[in-house]
Length: 99
Image (cartoon, rainbow, N blue to C red; front, side, top):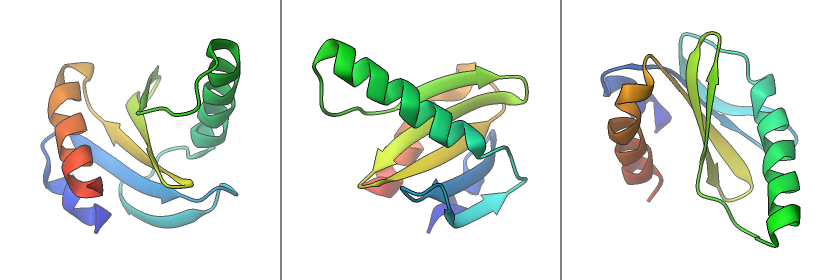
């Protein structure tokens, strides 16, 4: 399923991470998945501070390049790609896959 995202220009790695931080599925050149747990912590803090319950995605621009975290039930899809300028194309592909 998620391997299809590698066909989108610019995507280097995708991984579906469960609530415990384990890899459900992954494809492409690996990236550090520990960013998912840190991202979840940031999202939890922001939700508490803002009184919100849901989130759509979180973009992190780290040393290896941008990473998009997208919720999918209790899992998170990590999408590592080459350039922030590709964000619109990446979001479209991720939402199309997850819908």
